[in-house]
Amino acid sequence: MPVLGIAELQTILQGGFPEADVPTVEEVNDDFVLMSYAIGDRHGRPGGTVSGPVMMTLADTSAWVVIMSQIGPVVLAVTTSLHIDFLRKPELTDLMARARILKLGKRLGVVDVEIFSRGESELVAKAQVTYSIPPRT
Amino acid sequence: MPVLGIAELQTILQGGFPEADVPTVEEVNDDFVLMSYAIGDRHGRPGGTVSGPVMMTLADTSAWVVIMSQIGPVVLAVTTSLHIDFLRKPELTDLMARARILKLGKRLGVVDVEIFSRGESELVAKAQVTYSIPPRT
Amino acid sequence: MPVLGIAELQTILQGGFPEADVPTVEEVNDDFVLMSYAIGDRHGRPGGTVSGPVMMTLADTSAWVVIMSQIGPVVLAVTTSLHIDFLRKPELTDLMARARILKLGKRLGVVDVEIFSRGESELVAKAQVTYSIPPRT
Amino acid sequence: MPVLGIAELQTILQGGFPEADVPTVEEVNDDFVLMSYAIGDRHGRPGGTVSGPVMMTLADTSAWVVIMSQIGPVVLAVTTSLHIDFLRKPELTDLMARARILKLGKRLGVVDVEIFSRGESELVAKAQVTYSIPPRT
Image 1: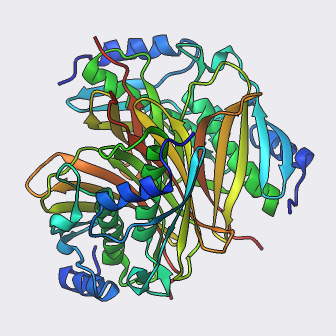
Image 2 (image 1 turned 60 degrees about the vertical axis):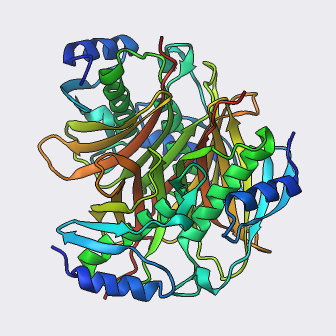
């Protein structure tokens, strides 16, 4: 069961990246979160698609948010590894990320992240992200 | 829609590894296959668990089988990359793999593989596997 | 042997990301390039370190540059997968990336990327990046 | 500096896999080990090449050995993740693995593994492997 809700997670996210346009937490539910990210021209790449780093950043952030939804605000959790397969070129439209916890241990959390364009069912990218969780008191 | 069924896939698998104890194809369905692999003492590791290479081999084989289920026998397809996260130590019991196609292009196929112990719902490992598909005529 | 030099690669890079602060190509040599990226406060994360996405972006860009150094301007090459292990928290100082070609085939290029802080020998992150190369004429 | 030498590492390896044909430790040196693995017909795949799982197993084992060379016998260390890119089809000849420590922390060790055929300089596969290290007393 989540210990933090949409509003709390959004506040932590905004506080962690005060100057950046952060993704929006849309759903929090058991072991997963759904996030969205508004895409504009500055995210584009030649050919009218979204750049890879935008998708990697969204995968990384979504994994962090789903871990916090389960264990509370762990601002100092750090990514230890990220693997991403890019599957299709997304249109220049909003991206969605569904982040689901695969494992949440004392030291490591592993998260599966599916990325797709809003309104589409096909995935544009798929990631597995591992976070190191600081000792909790 | 699959173009090969359980019996055909099993025959190709057996033919590709004539001397090995290959996994069993249990289900073929749209974009996924379910496979099982009988675990014995020789697969064990200290602590009574299944060795990592057994799980990696099962992930690799299941990805190959699900690709063949969609495009027919591509015996010369080769793995180009495999990423696996080990999540929990499995018991010394049969392993199951659910392999699902994420993308099937002309040149590359990307497959998501979930590995779990028979009868359990928690995953013991999770992989993303990419195959290079030889030109078809 | 490289077919493009430092100045040509820098021009392509700038043209591909006209509004962004792109990395600087520092060396081009046989099968590798050395790049640097100026780090400022906006790249920071709590704890005074560089954010993971900055390192992933640098790994991705460096892999693209080293492939172009070998085969010429392939603006439409796309990343098919990226794996990165974060090893140590870098200081808020300039990052360097050493990108080395592991394989350059007709369809795929695989690149090893080592990331470190300027003046340090220990790596802060290590990536393996695969690009799909469009058919050349 | 290594705390275990070739003979000690070979003994641990043999003890961990009593019924298997384990690789041979050829060199131990600072932060890396060189291992070899004798390839026979049973490792083959259609087309006269070595199977992917043989290379994954060698990568996994070599990473374990180089970690033990630094911190002593940690028989219960477990692989947490493995990423491998297959670069070229190896001949049916002995494989070599050069495993080098990227990071050795209290909880995680990350190892870079280069795999090549004996006598060749080109890599056939390249892996990044993470081990979880049990608490030491």
